[in-house]
Length: 155
Image 1: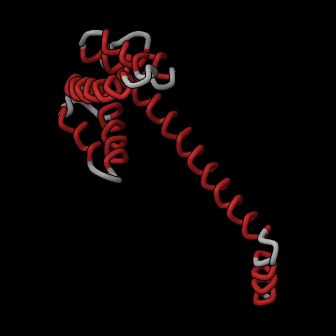
Image 2: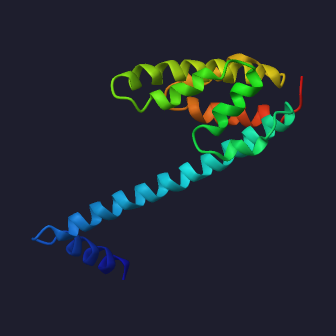
């Protein structure tokens, strides 16, 4: 019975007009997009909760700004690290053509410095942020260590 199912499936997707293959490819692309959207929403919720916990742990108010996409965690990290606020203007500069690429690189450097000082403010090693530079798995390791910093005890 299952052999007939597979045979019909292969015949349906190998139609001479090519619509079966295109439908399969479109389904695969749509499935991948839905998967990545679900992962992105999960990472957004996780990081927002982690930055809220970091803000509460370091008594930064209001902790709810962690839920502002893209800028919320940067605001909390800049407040915890007690560095200047002007690098936040780099986020706006990232939208300017040509200047935006340079501003984006500078912003990433500031984000690493802010996170280094944030980890140190909650009693964790600052060099943990450098693990995000490991190809392919660095961001997963960083997210785990962000959770440890947010919900773990102080040294």
